[in-house]
Image 1 (cartoon, rainbow, N blue to C red):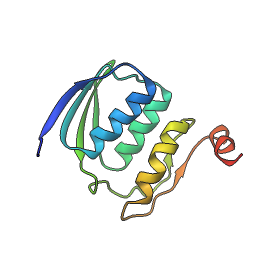
Image 2: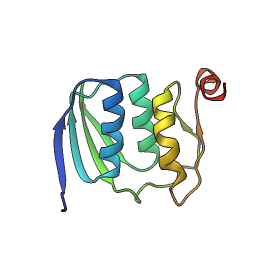
Image 3: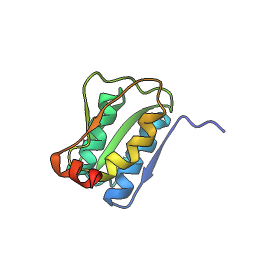
Image 4: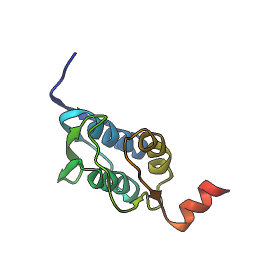
Length: 118
């Protein structure tokens, strides 16, 4: 089955919002996501995918348009991918990034590094 884009309304929940951004970025075509929760944590996820070559536009306070590149369409970013203080961003992206055909470095705030190291 092949889809060429879609629209979904989600519950304005941070955990679901992270996953919606990830799914939209890894889908092929344009996804419009309504009721997304924009916060510092979800902005970190959005910024990382933008750094990886995904076109993401904030259409209004809680609607994103994501031009997904497919599972193998992410591009290498020469700098560090910064999860800032978002443990969810770091946890969800470690596995995805480790399976790409390029190297990447995921980092975060000192507080996040303490959480993951101890």
